[in-house]
Amino acid sequence: MPVIIRPERPEDIAAIRLVNDSAFGRPQEGDIVEALREKGGVILSLVAALHGRVVGHILYSPVSIQSGGRDISGAGLGPMAVLPEFQGQGIGSRLVEEGNNRLREAGTPFIVVLGHPKYYPRFGFVSAGRYGIRSEWDVPEGVFMVLICQPQKMRGVSGVARYREEFSGAV
Ligand SMILES: CC(C)(COP(=O)(O)OP(=O)(O)OC[C@H]1O[C@@H](n2cnc3c(N)ncnc32)[C@H](O)[C@@H]1OP(=O)(O)O)[C@@H](O)C(=O)NCCC(=O)NCCS
Image (cartoon, rainbow, N blue to C red; front, side):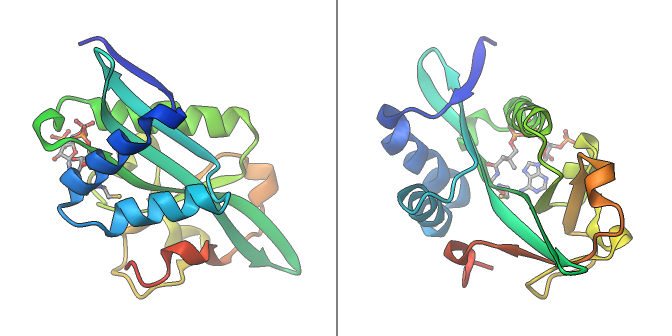
């Protein structure tokens, strides 16, 4: 399937909204995407395009961990969404792989994700608790995961990983 993964463009905005609303079946995630975009809170936003149609979307926003007097800034993966009729065909995986690779190449120290513990480990995510990294929200053990991209920058780093305020109230 000729799916292309590429950065979002201004003309994709309505289609990205539709992808999020359809995949989640509610407006909250689409609202977060739009608030982050408006307020400059997007590190990376990629779409999956099939024959020119946007069928998937992934967004990364800044997440910070205060540890030992330092503020380490990484990325939070999500929301991500694939149109229901295109799910289960590997499009989500392509989005995660491409997004994570771009952030790794940009020197991002870590990526966190709040998501299904059966899905994200295939991309190298492990339970954040293993590194003493915690979610700011009260979530079950194992659903908050981290991918350490730059081990030397992450040595001794632990604590609460804070997303931007646009996420508040969403979980
Ligand atoms: C999660 C999502 C983006 C994955 O996209 P996709 O293109 O279906 O993903 P892939 O085809 O690469 O992978 C499919 C795998 O994801 C799993 N999966 C899909 N949605 C899942 C979910 N909500 N929870 C757990 N696992 C899920 C499938 O079981 C499948 O697992 P398998 O490979 O072991 O069979 C897509 O299913 C979606 O939009 N879901 C609704 C929105 C959502 O929950 N987003 C994630 C939270 S931010």
